[in-house]
Amino acid sequence: MDTRIGAYVALTKPRIIELLLITTIPAMFAAQRQVPAVGLLIATLVGGTLAAGSANALNCVVDADIDAVMRRTRSRPLARHTVTPRAALVFGVLLGVLAAAVLLAFTTWQAAALAVVAILFYVFVYSMWLKRRTSQNIVWGGLAGCMPVIIGWSAVTGDIGWPAWVFFGVIFFWTPPHTWALAMRYRADYAAAGVPMLPVVAPDREVVRQIVLYSWAMVACSLLLIPASSWIYAAVAVPLGLWFLAMAHLLHTRVLRGAPAKPMTLFHLSNLYLTGISVAWAVDAAIGLPVLGWPG
Image 1 (cartoon, one colour):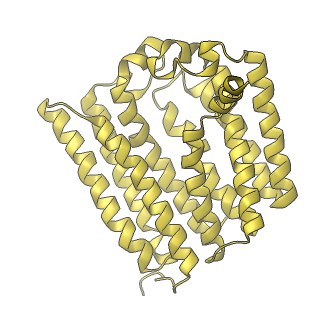
Image 2: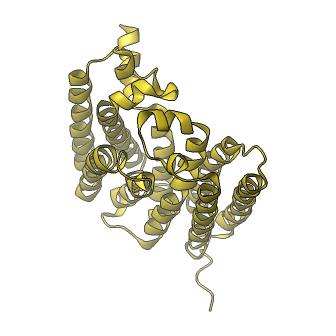
């Protein structure tokens, strides 16, 4: 029984959900420039967890053949046949319905609608269309991973403020360096599964060039949040951004010189970066110091 429960939990990909929730919470704090009501916070996190779990479970159904080939994913429930595709499909749909119901009942209809859009986009646009057809799969498919920010903001206010769109952009530009660094490490896996990730279809020189470009765009976007925050966010975002850029350029230099690339260093740093600026944005809003505003 415990093994079966664990298999269903694994379908939701809890580690990915953690990253999504990390970006939901600061958006809710920033929407009010203070700590939101505890009930609203819990409802949004529960609804967001269910929505992400739904998208991930349905992704497992679509990607069952890929997961069975890749060493990194062979232990997933459908690849090991511990859950049937039909059961996983029903489970994923049920989670999606529950997510929409929770968000609609306890937050705003806008948050519920955005959660449904995120699930449908991740399953039908990314998993079923982009992933197997283009090396730009994760660029545009990554839009689904940006949605928790605007879901969190809209759960509080019923609309989407410009700071939420800016952080949406941060995550959009963060996704390619994060994913391509991982794909460089598991290039053979993706190639065997027939998934045209950029490191599979392009030389490393082009991959790291793209990583550097997206990293600069990500850091530049993160700095646009400074006028809507106090010095606390700036004190974290600036040095973290410089650190990330330094490591992205180091990866680029290693590849150009023919040295071991070590892309997983940047992959792990990307998780730390996103967590760091998310926490800084949340703490900044919770303390509620005066925002710096735009120059002039």
